[in-house]
Amino acid sequence: MRKKHLISIVFFLTISMLNSMAQVPQFSQYMEMPTTTNPAAVAEDEMMSVFGVFRRQWAGFSGGPQNVFASFNAPFKAGRTKHGAGIVFSSDEIGLFRNQSVLLQYSYKVKLRSGRLSLGLGVGFINNTFDKDKVDFTGESNKVMSGDDFHKESDPFVSGWTEKNEDDQMSDILFDVSFGAMYSTDNYYIGLSALHLTSGTIDYGNETYTMYVPRTFFLTGGYNFTTSNPLVTLTPSAMLKTDFCSWQAEVSGLLEYNKRVRGGISYRFGDAFVFILGMDVISGLRLGYSYDLPTSKLIRSGGSHEVYLRYSFKPQFTKKNKYKSDRIL
Image (tube, rainbow, N blue to C red; front, side, top):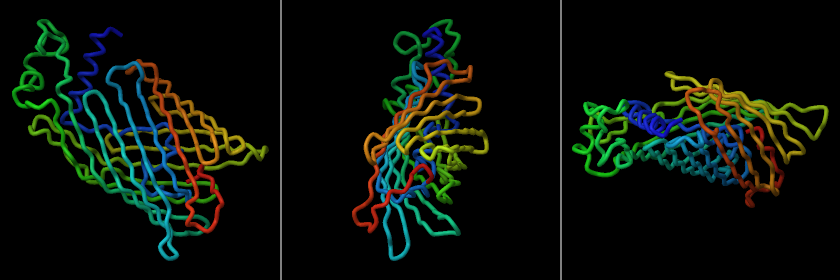
């Protein structure tokens, strides 16, 4: 793809987000880090943990999404009831946009039949920034080139940009709330959550340039299948994501050997095949990597890369020291 076309596509993707929706980041290893989509999963494995993930989407495509997510959470008891609490930080970039958020998460857990029901709440803030100083008008002195097929001088976004906004960046801070529920047993789990319930509007100081954060709903589930070999476990899982304007579905299957090494494949409908590898480096330390092979002809890139690292341990203030599998949350 020629550089001129590449720059033009990124520019189009950037300005088309104005007066539209902010991007909701996606992670291919969603089954390993359910707190990215559901606050009810906080401390669901009854372990204190810290983890982080870095995702580079559409490698080789200038301005493609780049996501960072970090979390710390821990279980605690109040009387005879069980709870979980944590804090998460995320930073998502696409084109000239950057979303940074800090969120406090809490979950309440109660025994229900043969499993456990968890209810979770997340409260925090989102800071959205648009870096207008990096807009490339493809001409000298940031002027539209004569005969340019991609940018027009009559475009109000181009002609009125510098007059209306003197700062290099425009930003706005929104209050953010999320809610989730999860039911889990030793063999399976199912979760339902809603992110960005406040669905705030990002205001850049001019009615022409606004964006809103859509309410996004997630339905997830997974199951543990034992095989004829007691050292091998098959764990299929699935995720459905929607804002009721668009839908995204993903199905996955992982094989785990001796509770230490795992690998598998996912398919994100209409988007990509995902290859996943992971291992427990030492007791409590888990490392994972995934590669997305795009199937869509809309984006031509070197695929997407995602690296995940988690360290979990049993809090010393608990009475037992028995590790619970975190494959099923």
